[in-house]
Amino acid sequence: MKRRTFIQNSALLGAGMLASKFSLAADGYANFPVVRVAEKDRHFKSKVVENIIKEFQSKVADKELGWLFHNCFPNTLDTTIYDESTATQKLTYVITGDIDAMWLRDSSAQVWPYLPFMKKDKNLQNLIVGLINKQAKCINIDPYANAFYNDPTKEGEWFSDHTEMKAGIHERKWEIDSLCYPIRLAHAYWEETKDTSPFDAEWVQAQENVYKTFVEQQRKESLGPYNFMRTTPRGTDTLQVDGWGYPVKPVGLICSSFRPSDDCTMLPFLIPSNLFAIVSLRQSAEILRKVKNNTDLAQKMEALANEVEQAVNQYGIIDHPTHGRVYAFEVDGYGSYMMMDDANVPSLLSLPYLGAVDKNDEVYQRTRKFILSEENPFFFKGTAAEGVGGPHIGRDMIWPMAIIMRAMTSSDDEEIRTCIQTLKKTHGDTGFMHESFHKDDPKNFTRHWFAWTNTLFGELLWKTYQEKPSLLV
Picture (cartoon, rainbow, N blue to C red):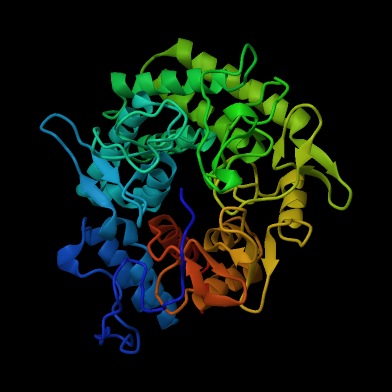
């Protein structure tokens, strides 16, 4: 993903539109500008989603939170959905926002908060089915690619990358989580609906490719087939050591050449992504066994999950001089490790949100204290906020996504309340969340249209409304 331009004009808003001079006149919202895309221009409409927006706004006294929920929660549906269904198959293409490409990670995360509402909205369910189908096709085109176009003939801005690029691929950065997120989505869809229609031969082929790719990237026998370099002024946009990344000792962990931020790893065994892979392998195995009766591949998936889990416990937990036994961010199997966290999910902070660890786990809790301290080199404190950032944007830039994850993984009511109030105060007068903002100036932000964070913020608000509505006052 290319470096973002800083946006300092607060008139530019999260749906990629200029602020309207008209206001929401009813129900106490007259002082808030209309920034959500006009109804006639929305890509997808759901009465169920509109009803929960109305419910939230009628029940939550804080009008600014009601306005933000109205803008952010439906942002994925409003602006990023493209129906590509054919006469024989449902297909959904979901762009990330201000880039016309579909990331396997982002698209899964963008629609995730809508899963609980599928039973009351068949069109919403069909949208999810279409995305599961589309993602399987993408994985079968190239399991090492992280982002795709809807046009299979398109050669985009990164087509000159020094790797095995194909038409229709936006970017070919190998990231473990790119294969985990579609499994997470498919498994949750199946649990919610009991519908098995997406799990056809194409989906099974995608699972075979997932398994094959993960095993290749354990690098036990060789470096594997994946190699990547880019001509770029940014060191984090390419791989060192002739495009293979720094060496690893094959100990059972899976190499991830890039992080969820699309920045390269320094040490290729990325621990949060390996923990995510353990969950995903077991979820895939459950579907394969119970739906497809494919016990052979299911057993392979489970055996790999067990091997990675053992390796994480042996190599991914280190002794920190201040915080004790904690998860490292990256390791190499030789004994080297990197201590930090990155805002993008999967992160160490987000592990309970992904079901990868229990939030009360002692190792996680110690790791969490490290992440939210100034011993984490990418934890920033300023006059506007405090929170986790990462190398992708750089120093002093806090990511709303990390503040959301802090709230999602907290058991402390006051911490949750503080996170929500911080997010309310740092949208830069736009009514939307952003990729990042400066710790001292929320109007100095990146990405005016970033649907993942918008919808994720809506998920946090709805979860809080259902479980602890007093925290929204």
